Length: 337
Image (cartoon, rainbow, N blue to C red; front, side, top):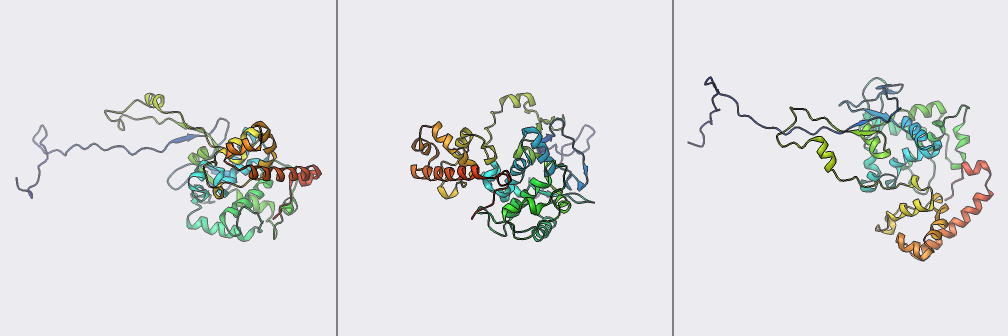
């Protein structure tokens, strides 16, 4: 047969040519996340449709914040630290530790009043963030540089902690957040709610970042099944156990969790490790006692004795300041350079 000859299709029972049968591997479907029990999700919200153009479902950050408060029994500021923290700092989520907070922000969407939600990374989202930056004041913080997206989401988190709190009284953001030394005025509470209420993430991102909802096991149809398909039940049984989730700073609530959190960064270079915070240092004396001394704790965390002692000294000074603080200052400590 010459190379240029046409290869005929095989003949069917009636002599007519039939097409060659081809086996196409079905495209894997993305995992479906089911909202947690008792969580009321509706496709329409006051800020727009909770769907992407491709049909993927979204959940608003405000609703995620309220759910975390109920699930974990924590106050508004703590829930906001978990919600907005993943978009501001690399160390506040597993994905952030692997690829950075900028990668986490790619999962953010902006609700539209009359259309589908748009990704923050797109033109509409970037334009919206630019407008927001002009509406909110500069809040200095030693961890974030001025003009960065990290500082923007840190500031939005401060606002959300106040306006999303389940209070029944009128509040003044400028009065409540005065201790953070803002350079300028915050928007009104109504405008702040309008800004913050439009942020949402896909179901699968909410599950990965905050353990929201459960992943449903997909049902394989006969059309999708191949001869060698392993039954779904067998796949589940054979799947290895998932690795325990890495701790984020919001999980530090005791000397034990402090050690587990800081131990995650033992192999990183010192400049790559997250900074110590006052919250972490509050549990440091207990961690030293738990492990038998500063030298022993330093070995466990990959720190020198001098480094541990330096943090202990700061912890002692901060404990003295907390003892002097009034109830107001204890809630809203003034930032220092």
